[in-house]
Length: 145
Image (cartoon, rainbow, N blue to C red):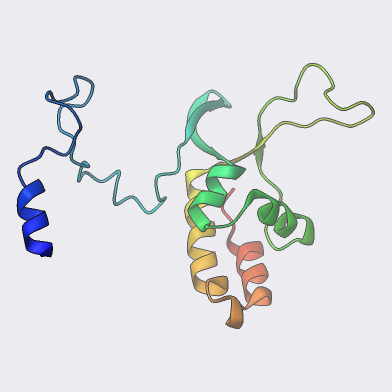
């Protein structure tokens, strides 16, 4: 029965309608290095820092890479398990919350993101056997600037 259903739908294209979409020449997923990238599709932005363009990731994109929420990364930073963010966006011009010292958003370079991905994989991937002391020492000693 299952084979008959597959035969019936086997000749259909993988897009709805009679024509292929104009904005995507082939509807198959590309097999280039972007898909197999270690950063799991995290999007970066380019920022000019000290006169040179650097690829940077926000805390949300870092969280996507290491499979954690941004609040978790902020907690790790407050506990000293990872260093404070080296880079930040410019602070907002107008105060959005009265009597609060506004800062810019945290930014992480590609080398920092790759380092944290490797460190979380090595030390804290298995939450039952996580080595938080080893993670903290490793990041304190080897964190890229």
